[in-house]
Image (cartoon, rainbow, N blue to C red; front, side, top):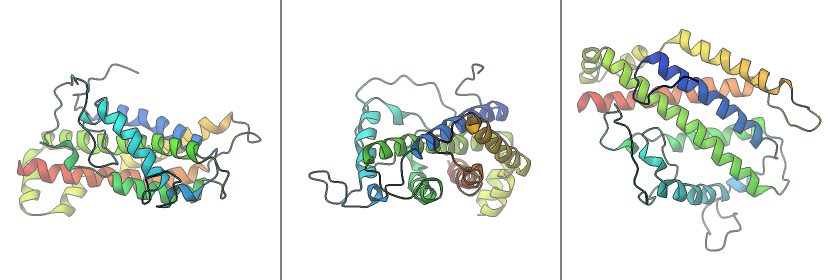
Length: 251
């Protein structure tokens, strides 16, 4: 992959980064479905953890994982948004590029709650039903998948929105002043690009799984991942774009 500066607001460069994240999401989903659904890991108070009477096992795994991530500076990056509130500050000096994102607080646009709910709703469709006792492995892969999905949505939301804003700031300021959120969404929507994304995700799903042995690997119906992109990833990205532009135009 070519060297694409993180501050590059060219839509073609942004699209390449988003395309690269598609494979990451696909691979993590495939790894997750090698285990049964194990629905108990999403049930509050059923984690089996001492001193954790209220959280689910997934939420506990997210808490511990993201505490470590936060200490290492992961969430100093605009597209990396935590699922867990109240995380510690980084314990290492984080040297970051000069991001073009105009937000005082990157976490002011955080769609992780909606992402997690949509992901948990997806699992009964892609996982085989049942309980194999592999709870730790299940939530491990859940965390990897959730973070990849979140990264894709927030990167698209922030960088695409800023790129489009810089292309026509007067238009977006006018619509923001008129509280025309419908108009903003319409201006953000590029149906031909969305169709291309959906087609590419389907093709990648088919290619990735084409060499897998179904006798030892569980496979995903590509239609289910395509629908998740169509009904969750793309709409939440646009919701994030809208939130960013409303903030950007008022700054």
